[in-house]
Image 1: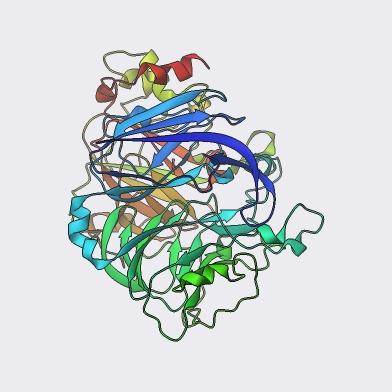
Image 2: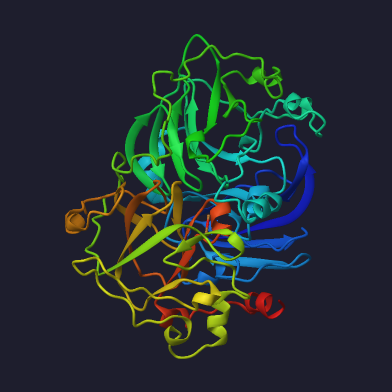
Length: 546
Ligand code: C2O
């Protein structure tokens, strides 16, 4: 089956929470349309850029086996789609299922609205959890700022502004929220335009809520009053059902939770998406209530209540006051969730250590570094440059492949660097390997690291220094697999993946501010196979036209 979606990007003025600002939207919708497909379908996504900036679309979490050039990463796997131009993404939906999302991968643009949900269905998944629920509902949660992201970005990157991330003004649930306009007198904000999201659900049914954090910075703590959440999926991996009351979702992570609409005595409840303020460097004085609410109602007539713009309704419900508030900025404990389809992690054949942190660089600007290199978009897509230099072995032209080394007992390593002055830190994995990556977070903030093109096993996480003597003792029996993992402040995480997917795949912090400060590196996997991939002419044209 071939499925076709048309996405038109444009800049418009909008007011998701009542506060007017310029947004960059897809088809004038916020969030963008749901893209769904069955595993194995051919997907054609026509993107027309009617906005004022460049754009790209990245399908977050998709393997893109054999189609690395469709990964949509600006100046890595493709050049930007200029204003007025179009580009067609065309690929086979890989052998994976579950909840994903798509977003612009150009600068911080997705924070302005270029996001949407992406769901892959498969018989395999349905056989395992299909009869646990009646209905499917996407729930996108995100932080929200009252201005265009590039303005915040320039002040964030201004000299002397040491790693102080802009603090969100609000949060949104499926693109809607309430904001108290009296907090920003004089600004263009219309109370009656605040549009809190209402979920009208049938009574005595079970709903699969696909919770996606599509934000740029904040971890969100999601809950539904009086309804326990049974987690069954994380990042496209089915999880043995486990019940929670509050769900921590780091930026770019996804969870499916089941809720059953069987509460008696009342029929209207708050759905809460709380910004985890412990992840912020400073607090926002305007952000009086960091807990953003939507409404769940069993009654279809409740749509007519004042809830969309009034803050005065009180749901007489249990807000899970029994659960301690989060006092730390942490991922959901990855050892407490277990994949339903067990997979043993194979022995690693190669080990890399990356040290991630922030340093004051030239002009006293605070930038992010991975092993001494801070990422900046190259002058053209790195993948395109590799094809330009096309030679029997791209490995000698794109990266130095003589510097991979197995872990030795002292943990000393040498790593591949591609053009340090070109700001591209590339580790070359020349052939099939089982790769361990130790992420050392030397920073005082947590970082949700995302690896493109793969899911990885979460072998271990911890505070402080990595316990090298315990390296061989990590549990390999069915650890959690995912594509985005929050690495705690001054902590470490050991992730493992099987490098069987040829391509140039970024590993980066998904906080937009940090990505633009340079917190990104790349794995170049099987360059001889990358050389054999066949990107379409229109793809090369985007770079040639630059
Ligand atoms: Cu959600 Cu580099 O991606």
